[in-house]
Length: 107
Image (tube, rainbow, N blue to C red; front, side, top):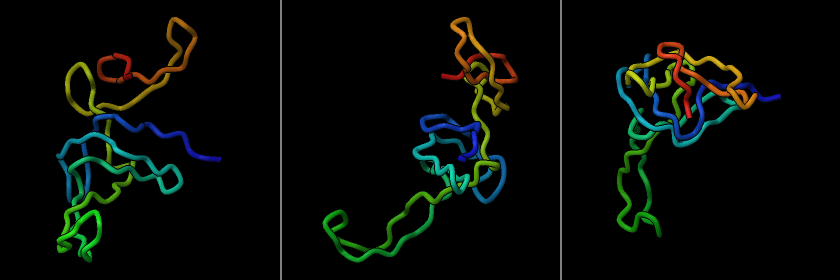
């Protein structure tokens, strides 16, 4: 059984720990088995690549590396600050995520 995570693809998140602390970005991919997420422009690493169709020149390419989910917090849509996430039923009896700081629903 896979874990239920507080972060989904497309969320805007802030890094709260580690080398990239303080940076914000959009989640590109979530690996539920390893509890890691790929965040746009965060935790950049250098990759030495041979010339290929994608990179005809080759050389050193900067690329995002996965960040552990525990080091990320979702940005509150109302205040723009990191917030914890809760789940509740909305008017249509559907389970939705909401920001604990403002109470606003997270799309």
